[in-house]
Length: 122
Image (cartoon, rainbow, N blue to C red):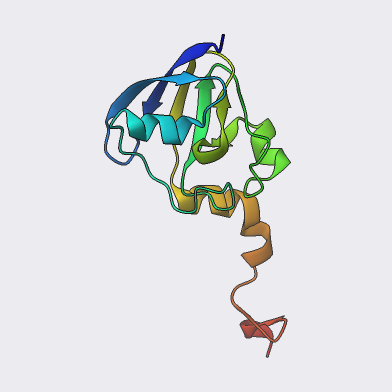
C-alpha cells in the first residue's frame, strides 16, 4: 500500500497556502494541481527552476531534478514537478530568478558576454 503524505505549500507570490495529500509514488506538483492548487511551473521536466521550493520541514526525493544543482538540493531546495514526498512536508515557493542567480550567478557576475568576452573588456 502506497503511503500518502500531507504537503503544505506556501506560495510566496500570492501569499496563499495549499494543503494537499500526495502519494509517495506521485509527483507533488501534478497531484497538487489535481487538487486545484495553482502553483508556478514551466517545463514539468525538472530542467528549469520555475517550480523551485525551499523545504521548511519534512523529506522528499527528486531523482530527476537536473535543473537544480546538487549543492542547492543539499541546501534544501527542490523542484516540485519532479519531487516525491517521503514524509509530511512544508515547502515555500521561491522566486525563479533568485534560484537561478544562486545556481548560475557566478557565471554572469562579469556582465553580458559577446564572443566569449565580457562586453566591458572589448
